[in-house]
Image (cartoon, rainbow, N blue to C red; front, side, top):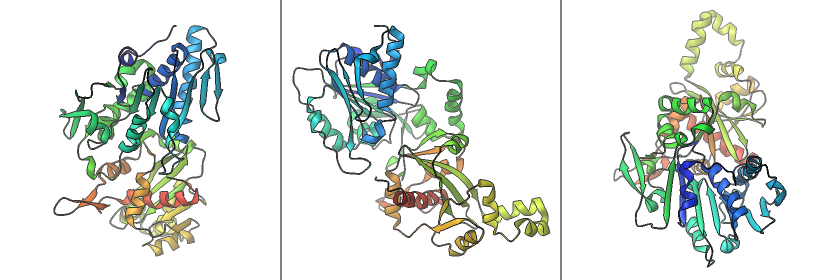
Length: 438
C-alpha cells in the first residue's frame, strides 16, 4: 500500500510496546500520525478493536474523529482505491467498521459530557488499540482504570497517548519520565524511565513535520520565542516547565488572531474589571466547540485613558468629546460591544450604573468565593488570541499564594490579576447562562 509515514513516527509500527507516547511541541503531527496508524491497522490486521478517547466524548467529534475520516480519504487518494466504500461509518455514534474483515473503531469519553462523572468504560475490555488525545487532560486514576481494563489475551495490545507538555508535577511526567535541566533556565528535558520496559516515548516538534506546515504557522512558532516565551519553550519546543505546582492555570492555547476571533459566529460575552491606578481590564469571550476563545480588549488605567484623550482633544475638547458619556463608556465605543452582556466587578456599583446609563448591558458578575470561581475556570478549555499580550503575561504569572511554611493556598496571589478577574466574571456567568457542564 502506498502511504507516506512521517519518519519520527516509524517506531509506532516497528516496535512491540504496550504504552506509546507521541508527545512534544505543537505541529508535530501527533494526532495525524495516530489516526493514520489506526486506519492502516484496521485495513491490514486480522483483529483490531480500536477506541478513540478524550476527556469527554463531545470533544472527539471535531478532533480525532474528523482526523480519522480525513485519513481514509487521503489513503484512498494515494492508492487510487476507494477505501471509503469499504468502511461503514456512523457519524452520529462516531464509529466505523472495515467491512472486509469486521475490524472496528469507536469513540469514548473518560467522563460523561463535560461533567466530572466517570463514564462507563466496561466495553473497552475487548479493545486491542486505544488512542488518547490531549492525554494531559486525563487524571492518573482515570488512566489506571482504563489501562487495567485491557485484559484480552492472545492479541496485540497498544495504548497510544498523544499529549502536549504539562508541568513537571503531572502524573505523566512523574510516572514515566526523568527530568534533566535544559539550557533554557526554568525548563527541563524529559527522558523516559528505563524501568518502564513496555513504554516507548516518541518525541517530536514542528521541525519533524516541516513539509506539512505552512509558512505563516512556521513564522508564528518562531515569533512566540519573543512574544510568548513560556508558550514557545513548552508548547512549541516541548520542554517541561518548573514550578507548575503553584500555577493557577495551565495548558491554555494560543491558536487564533483577533481577526479570527471576530469571525467565530457565536454571541460574545464580556468580562470587565475596573481600575483607577490598576488597569481597567476588558476581555471578550466566545464559547464554540467546547472551547472558550478569549480576546483582550482593554488594559489601561482610568488615569491613562483620560490623559490620552486630553492629549488628543485638550481639556475643553475632552468634555465635548465625551458628550455626557462616562469615560469608560466612551472608551468602549470602538469595541462594538452593542447590547451584549458585560459582566462586571461587583464592588464597582457606580461604574456599572454609568455604563448602563451609557447604553451598555453591564451587569454584576455575582458574588462567589474566589476558590469556586477559579476552580470552574481551571476546568475549561481556553484559547487566547495571539495579540492578547497583557493577558498572556498575567496568565503565566498567576499563581496560588502560600503560607510562611510554604503550604500552597487555595486562593491566587492578589497581584497583576486584572484580566484574570475579568475572565472569572465572564466565564462563571457564561457557564450558568449557556448551561455548560464542566
